[in-house]
Length: 591
Image (cartoon, rainbow, N blue to C red; front, side):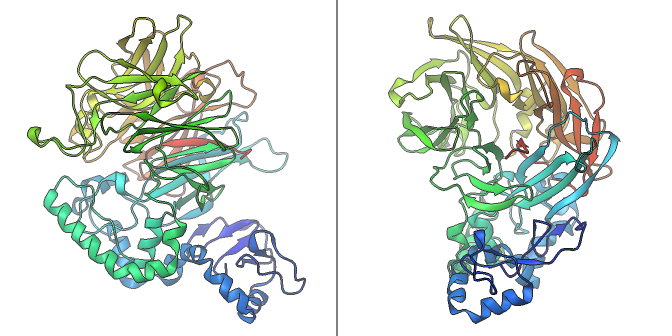
């Protein structure tokens, strides 16, 4: 691609800030696939020609076939469009959020929920306290979350509609043979069909479609239709709409079969390359599924599901290489939102919570509501079972929701134990802000023998985003971690977490670590240390993104899981502000 260059092996994109190259090297250009180097006539792998910019231009201009092949690569060109051809009106439409007071913004875009408007790659991050442990493995700490590029000033906004942006902190050796460690920061939007379409249109095309103000939502729906109609010819000619994946890819990120995947409910996974988070496109041959598939640490299988089918819940299994090996449909008599599932060593546990995807106007309930008159239930089937193999178990008491599961396992007694965060009330419009103080880490013990479910609250600390040492997924475990809600946030504008919790699910004890006043954190992730005993559940570190709202600085904190509650063993200050996000993942260097 004529607008990009590779320096020291790193793709430099116009308008994207990169770390300073350590040594001067001849510039190279990325040409459309099939254009070979002029002097040798050899075809370069992946279309990368290692020649000078001038000679590359001569080749591209001299060859009619090159012109035809360039037209086949509009998607690559459109990635650069915003930096190369952004109009002044388009710039103003996309940057107004960074120029006005918080009180003028939609509530869910204030403070550190406000988006950032630049991308960067490989910027050095400074260790400001402690040191990165020498037994900390090489890899990337990646966060996914909403970072809207275009928001109409008169529109409402919900974080579910924001464009996905990935933030990554790479931890690696400071140099060959060095014992010290260093960190580098990158961030990038996930390029979806929506991203490409709005990039061409230079205006919002889907702004304000999730809004509790029906009149405002209707007005913006009409404006969206008008904007799309105006931009359709350019969008179709550009080709990015076909090349990009559906949805916004803003919810989760996982690593499986050597690929990093950005996920959102019901959309195909989007493949992202490391270390600079470049979007490669939808995963070939995959089905759309939700943001929380499970990966079995023993077999390497990925277990996915999707509640978008009218026949029920689609369910499938991939092998460790990412190849589909099983698929079925689990019949459901109703339309329901299922955000997470659980797995054991042999079974899959399906959650059927009464969060209905149908309006109930007789009770004044919108299109997504919790019907507490209907009990929550669990469905259990063999991992490669079929829809008719599911056995259902009802949870006694009023219906509740569980968005996120910590883990599940098979007890020696034959019972199946599930641990997750239970919500007795749900408010989708504000991301459950008004009811977050009611959420509790809960254990459900399912007895196939008696057909009953026993429920036990494990912690009185309101929390969500539960995680464990992922070597213990589907196995008996003792410790889990989560993000603790700020008890005073019921009157806030958006969700915030005041600290990290460590739960002992055997004793039902909870320890909470808090970073201090005005500092909030995201979802924690457990990283085993180098040489960790595979059966030592606490032998590793907890990573978490944090943000100081007074200084407007963002950091990555490294906590010792074995000595939880003590100050971080390392604080890494990031060169850019990282907005609050949704889910995180640790991507090992062997990817």
